[in-house]
Image: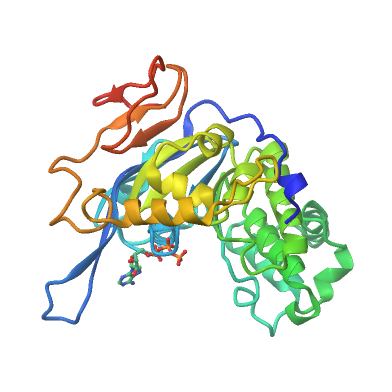
Length: 350
Ligand SMILES: Nc1ncnc2c1ncn2[C@@H]1O[C@H](COP(=O)(O)OP(=O)(O)OP(=O)(O)O)[C@@H](O)[C@H]1O
């Protein structure tokens, strides 16, 4: 991805009632067989909201819990506890056992692998027609054909590609088809789990620009899951940082990535060379940060409950001015002298 393009300013954040709200979401996986009492805490008390027409990036290293969060929200995984509100309705209570068709038509998922998500035996037209039919969006033959061509145009593909098979398309084109299939349903929210990570660097920016266009022109909200901070800065209005199953920092993307307050966020940011700052990639500083963050003695979020940083979970601190939506959860955080940062023990930043 070109660093000059990634230097562009983030777009304006969405406003109003959240399209999607996640409250206190936790997920524990039992491991080690039937008789084992061992478990992995993949998510713990995650709160995250997605405004209408807003893109929120969820970033973190491999194993931090990003995909588990997406799978829980897409109802592919059952959370251990918590609430998922779509348009203010708690969908875990409404559809107790699995996602209803209504839920799937409100929320669609785009996966990492555009190669695996399209059955090679079918033409592109099949995938889009099927989506329209399942969700009751198909009309007369002529109207359906028009809609198929419109969907192709929206994602930047030629209508004659409707007759192609997946293997005749490039990875980027296939991901566009996967996005068109999601759009056929006319969702309010798209969960995009690493949608560009399997694509050539040269076509990634096109997919990010498409996501941006869908937000701007159709008001679709997106949860963009990635380990690529540069793309989060380019695309997302807000960025949330996940570490060991917990959100440790959240804020407007440009602010958070320019002023990371949590040592883990600093560690992630330190991996991204910034052409605007000479010497921005310092391997020695990065190694020091990693040692500090991952040390059981220095951080409560290392996944070792026997040796937390403190017996108490850290509260959220606002970072910067009072109207800033940037917060951090870390025992080690100390607001800079004279700054307005303060602990947010009870209140939520929203
Ligand atoms: N089905 C499962 N059974 C047991 N443990 C699981 C399962 N799925 C995920 N985990 C564990 O939950 C934690 C979070 O995994 P998850 O895949 O959500 O992380 P991630 O941030 O999405 O990583 P990646 O970017 O590699 O996909 C990890 O410790 C993982 O081993």
